[in-house]
Every structure is written in structure tokens, then in C-alpha cells.
Image (tube, rainbow, N blue to C red; front, side):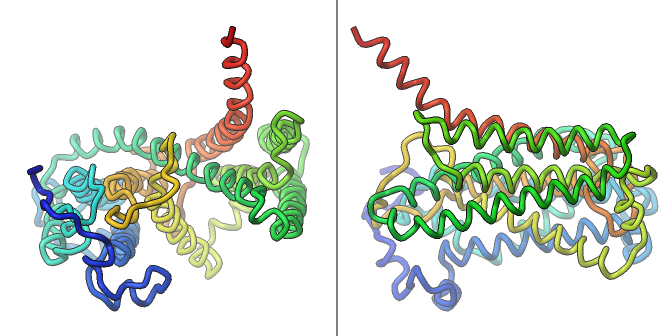
Length: 401
């Protein structure tokens, strides 16, 4: 008998009776279950994001009790950038512990399924302990974590990138199957046309807003290269041997145009090429709403990526057995662990020595280049995923005597 696993095989319906997979309400109505658990973990992550922001912007004013910790030195070392890193470290340790205790869980009969889906009192205490522990660490250790968090955040962006590309290619393949081809033909055409229109309009607006003068060479390069990548992706997708149509390059175009827009928006204020950044320097309701939406976007991106555990599987299961877990628990917690590093980098501008202004997120030249490179990498990975099957097929044909 394997450790932590029951001898009898239990199906999902037997362990979670009355739970209807298609009903969102039933996921909470029938108590602890893996479907409900993922929303709880997402809520915990959301609260942690807001806590990191509060400590960054208002830590010294509204949390004087932080000064009681020896390593806080009156609260100076536990607010601002260092405060964000301490909150991020606590969240990272919690999800890392959950990852180590759930990785490899494949059946609902495994006792680790119950640990992932329940035991909320114990996990609440564990979460509280992990959130307090970083305040006992010296600042030098926190800075080391901040440097490591750069790589962890990069891993998160890579996972998210692959997840987005996998979803887009899956959507296109689904529309091209015999079962849905007739039904999806009109819809996919409309979506593709709309995607290209939004891409072109977005590029034009970026030229008008962020490259108003010929001296804005960097922004002109960013925007123009994004347009070139859109053209390259479309050309590759329409090659006769690939023949993926307009839908996937159009949706990928939306993604890289959005990343380019975010990159230019992340440029620090002070130049005539980014007048929008100057306007965003003033704290108004639009700035506050944009900031809240940005935090919610981080949580949604982490949540949606975490449940896509098959995006890195070379051989995906066509059908799932009744006793299989609904998603990869270990992968889910690993994504949230790296997401903890990612939100820290956004709140400190990817610079552990960078002081961020209130109600700002992901601002600074480092943030700009991270976004730009992420967009370029997304386009390269997408085109490789289109070309790779053709190349491998040609090599296999050449190897056959």
C-alpha cells in the first residue's frame, strides 16, 4: 500500500455526491471539494495582493505595530518595497508548502485530495504563520529573496505565455474539426476580423499617444516591431503546409499588441513621448480604478493559468477517468507560488531598490523591457509551435529509408 493513498478506488461522484460539475453554485453548496477549493485559494491570493499594496503605500501610517518586530527597525524595513517582498515571501512559502504536499496527486481517493480541498482551519493557521514569519527575517535575506523572485516571476510569465498559446491553438483546432467546422466557420471569421481590426486600431493609437514626435525612436521601434511580428505570424500561419488560418494569428496579435501597450505604459513619466504617464501621475478615480483592475487581472491570470495543468503535457489525455482529480493540484500551487513572486515584481517595478509612487503598479524601465521581451518571446514561441510539426515531419520522412 502506497503512503497517503487509500486501498480502494473512489470515483469523483462517490467522494463528492450531489456535486454537479456544470453548476458554479453547487461547487460551494456541497462543502469542501476541489472545484470550490480553487476559488478559495484565488481569494487568498487576492487578499495577499491587496495586503502587499497596503503595506507598500500606507504601511508606516496604519500599521505601527510592525515596529515591534526587531527586524523592522521601527517599521522602516517592513514597509515600502521591503514590505512587499515580505508579504510576497510569506505567500510564496504557503503555496510552496501546498505544492510540496500535493504534487503528484492523481486520484480523488488519495488523502492529499482531502488536504487540498479541505482542512481550512489548519491551512488558515498555516497561512497566518507563513505571513508573519518573514517579519522575523533580516533585510539581507529579504533582498536575496527579491533577487530570486525575478527568476520566479519570469517562470510565471513563461507558464502564462505557453498557457495562452495552447488555449489559442486548441480553440482553432476545435473549430477546424468536422464536428464544429460548419458551426464555427462564421464565428471564427468574425472573431478573426475583429481581432485584426482591434490590433490595427491599437497600433495606430499607440503611434498617436506614445510616438507623437520623430524623436520617440524607442517607442516607434516597439510599435513598429509589434506590427512586423503581427505580419510574420499571419504569413507563417497561412503557409500551405501549416494552414492555420487567420484566427490564431489574430488572437496572438491581440496578445502582443496588449503587451506592447502595457510596456509603453510602464515607462516612467518625464518624457514627451509618454504624456499618458504624466497624466497617470495624478491620483484620481481613473488611476485608482486602473490600479484595482490591474490587481484583479494578476489574480485572474494566476488562477486561469493554474488550472491549465495540461498546457505543458506533451501527450494530453483525451478522456479522464472517474477517479482522476479535476486538475493538477501540484501545478496549481506551483503557479500560485511563482505568481506570488510575480505580483511582488509588479508592485516594486522589478527593482528591489526602486521606490514606487502610491497607486502605481509595474512602472519603470525594467518593467517596460520585461513586457517587450515577453511579447517578442510570445510571437517566437507561437511561430515555432506552428513550424515545429512540419519540420519534425519532414525529418521523420527523410529518416525513413
